[in-house]
Length: 354
Image (cartoon, rainbow, N blue to C red; front, top):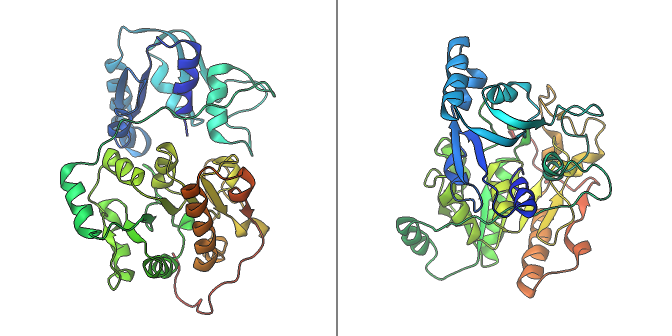
């Protein structure tokens, strides 16, 4: 979501040098972003959840990595004040952060995050503010994974990616964001019957989701990819179906059409009208939705907002998305509908859906 900052900076000056400071997890992917000069890696986990000593050492190592450099501008694209510690050792003409404006602190509620990050660069906060796409990513699927994909899809079916796990960040897990696992399985079965090959993606610790797919001919890439390989794999897919998780945003960065399943997080955080996006958010009718306040989620025992989404409704929108993009760019109004009304749920609701 922050990558459009690169495009905005390049639009101002094509020869600008851009150094991007980031955590270890995303660093390999950022090294494939066109327009970045250097990726400076920070031990983000130690900085956020480590002991006081580990936090201090992580920040000190980040300072050492950029010691002696002089920047014309520094942009802190995170509303958590701890990230501002990383800029204290930097010499800069000016420093601007999401917390540095008098009118608001952090991202303005209801605004698309990508536009708010661009606002850091342009300084424009009215109708003149331009929107920028993310920069290109130079990606290639490794030969070993290419061979694995061909073995899993010998008849060359169109690929649909599913990401049933995920929904975690460096500090904690957020199971409230997950769509029920059995709904993913029903969707995978329907996709197989309609001639698609389902590609399962996820981190190695997402292996627990395999239990509901054992009887289906899916291409299992869970734990098989790093972030650059995942991005390259998603580029090969006709679409991805995912709840609010990393692969959903990676797919958008590489131009893969997405069906986004949202509950605790509102669509306005991530999406503007696009022919490559369909969003289901029936939980928006609930009085508690959205429950994400920019920092944390509600203390909720059951993510009813996600359970309201039925795989048949997902299938309908996925068909429309794939068909329209196969024919060419469709009218925006066809695919950017945000479903807010309650959706019919399957009869069986007794099992744990987290």
